Image (cartoon, rainbow, N blue to C red; front, side, top):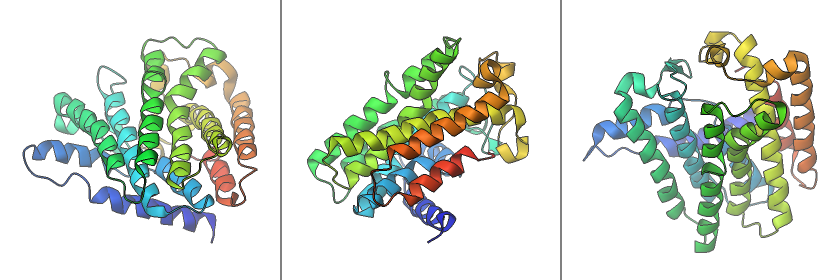
Length: 290
C-alpha cells in the first residue's frame, strides 16, 4: 500500500472515532459544541496516525490504539484552544477558520479546553482491549508528556520569553512539540503490548526528533508560507517578538537542521522490522508546506 493511501486510512479511522465524541446536549450543550468545533476542525492528525503506525508496526490491535490516539488528539486540541487565547498568542484563525474563542467567547474556549483535557483521560480509562496495567501506563505517559515537565512547561518557556539562544529554544520545542509526538509513538507501543523499554525508548526518540524537526519547519513556514495554504497568519511569531530558529540560524541552516533531525528520527526506528511507513512519514513532515 502506498504511503499516502495508508496515511489517509489511519486518518479516516481517527476521524470516525472523533466524530462520535461529545454529542451530549445536556447539561452543557454549548460546551460540547465548542469542544467539537475545535476537535473536528480538520488537521493532519499526525499524532494519532503515529500511534496507529507504531501499534501496527508491532503487530498490535488497532482498536485500542484508536482510542489512545483520540485521547491524544483531545489533549492536542485543548492545547491549541488555549494557545490561541488573547492571554497567550491571541490568534484569530486556526486551520483556516476562526479560533474557538472568536466563535464561542474566551470563557467557553477556556472551559472547552479544560473539558477536552479531562475527557482524554476518561477515554483512556474506557479503551477496549487494554489491560488495567496498559491503561495506567498510558495515563502516566500522556500526563507526563503534557504536564509541567512537558508541553505545558514548554508553553511557559514560550510565553515568558525564556528562550534566547539555540540551546534554550531546543529545550522549549522539545517540550512544547516533541513531548506530544514522542508520547504518540509510545502510546502505539503501549497499545501493542510492547514490554521492552528499549523498543519504547526508540519509539519516543523517533517522535522527539520529529518534534524538533516539525517545529523548525513551522518556524520556516511562518516566514515563507502562503497564509491561505498555511491556515493561519504568517509572520505572527515575529510580530509578537518571539525568538525563532529562523531568527537564530537563518533559513538555510534551518533547512539543514530539519534534515539532520529527520535523519536521526529515521535512525531511531531502524530496529523496527516494519518501519517503511514511519520512514516515509518522517520525510513527509520534513517537506510539509502547511
